[in-house]
Image (tube, rainbow, N blue to C red):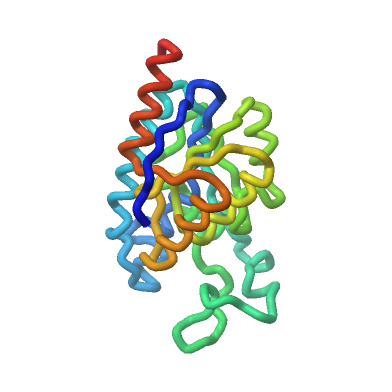
Length: 225
């Protein structure tokens, strides 16, 4: 997708940078997807670096920073694979059999922790979730409303799964959304591009990191921070 990179005035409303599932299991060479699936987690390093830049800029511009973190029960009782008889491909192994009950991102383990590069500061808030959509049966909306947030800048993993699911719900709940095209990542470039197109057309606007950094700097200057 060719990002249009339209700049918006972020000084008019309270803004939150929402970092979705930037966890060890997904991003570390010792995490589940690198070790068990042999997936190229290093390919997501540029997105991680952009998220680090965006977090610093958001803080400097007086924005709230919140995280989501997926964490399933150790006994697998809340796993998708144990609660569906018809499973989408994401939950199937290469031979077509159901994946082990959400072996990734087990609650209260190292794998479910936010990566060290983006470790939450004491004033940041982490929303723990068990489904793709970060609004589903979590306190996310309440915490955003309590902070007077109107606009979300969204980064994280995975573009077409948890990121898009959360963005769709955010728009339906009347939050304005900016998705950072090179601050989100997927294992599939095809699905990544398709998801960005979906968001741009129906749920928010898509901008690259450079453009969002410019908008945050403009907000900082206008607010005299």
